[in-house]
Image (cartoon, rainbow, N blue to C red):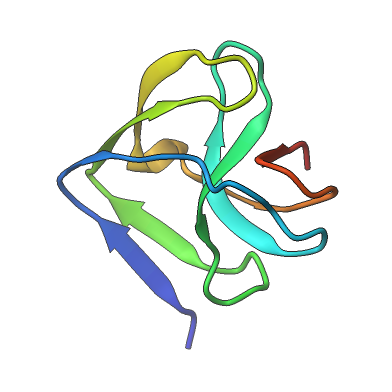
Length: 89
């Protein structure tokens, strides 16, 4: 049975301070600089989590300091290629 998570509501979120190379994360692609940044560890550690919901998230990109709002449909799962607050997948 596939694992799933649903986000509803409005959230103020922060980027994770450090990523582990090879680890899986849930986050966003910044609309300004296009770099990914993580807000949560992906609990299956496979990138196979089903994400749904109507939530909105307010966040600041740790790469370019752009502030923005994103919806749950914009959440991405990615595997970190390098350590640090962000990663391109």
